Image (cartoon, rainbow, N blue to C red):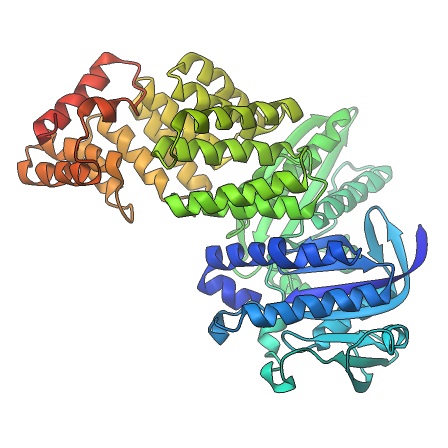
Length: 577
């Protein structure tokens, strides 16, 4: 363990749960923007190091107390100006606490009373405010041109001794920010407790094996910052006991309980795991793993991936990727990618422009981040596909260049092969696309974007019924899937001659683009709904008055002449030429 004196800054977003409930995508996008444009640059400029981030907070280490306070004041003053025209109930605000003390540095994380006090001071700060400890005040008073309000000795939660604290005066008047309600201070994350796995081997020596597996699972789950994991000391109280899941959940404050057993015989091991919702006492998921002992780490990874994937509301592409994925050297780059994904899924021209800017920032922050290059290709491919660019050939070249760069950096990224498959589809090389598509599935079989593209590929290949099944599977994997999944399903249903179902699918889209209107027109034409067919054909012509059937067909990738003719004949019947 490395012990050293350091200044620790703890920051937390106010009212995170309320803002996320009201507008999840918008809140995430705005938060990422603040991080990229303001917070992370301020930390870099003041020589800070981000130790960890969570969905709504971060922990930062500074070697200088002056740098930490300067950074905090800059962030809060600029956030005050950014929020000037934002309704109070929509503002993103932060609380910041700063402490100077000895910390323990181990495995890329920091611990100790220095960290704990900073976190408690942060909880004592007002929305938009900064609270510092007396030790920090001693260092910066007279050195920095700020004013401080003496708060006296504060009794902080779970600390035996009071802490002398000061509030840093900011640009705004002191009554401009209000103390936040207690409900807003609560961390809203799926909380999970892992109970000690039961040793079913009939061998007391295997008790160590069962306990070790439990502890490894706890450790790995704790690395997932989207989860709130109950500590080992709390969960191991129940070792060897028959438990009532509801009571355990209530006592530990855990929404989900993981319990399981280990049975070892020779060089084989069977691990059973189940995830239980403590509120309803209902089983969310259960699985059994039979493996050679040499494969115990694979068992652990599978369990962790499955548990995380089943938690409601936590469906996010980067969270479902394999745990062996290379991680970026910059958390800022990672979060840029997340923001770019949110924008990409909105499927509008303006959102695509913003997504391009965000993904380019990610690459600038971490040039060797394969996943960022992969999504650069995906976002540029979207611009090419929808014609949201002045030079389509240049855009396609940029798309391919980005994907090839990603592949050179990490050939084990499912998104890399998903996008290489997409490029081959654009080239109408469906056989080569199938290779990359199956490679992507082998790397991450439960990734909704990979699964939905398998459905698209099968549709283009003349197997639309199978394609529709894959697309529906993707929808089940991600209940919060992008709206465009309905478009993929509608196209598969049309190709399968299921016109009524196709119309129902397209009808679930918030709006129709030119190609989608063409499909709806063809559906109505084949059903004999001449007026509706003509209405949607006119919607196609309204977007591009000189559009021809050949222009529309050029965007499609049917491998079978019958399927292509079926679509073309539908457009002709709708009145397009």
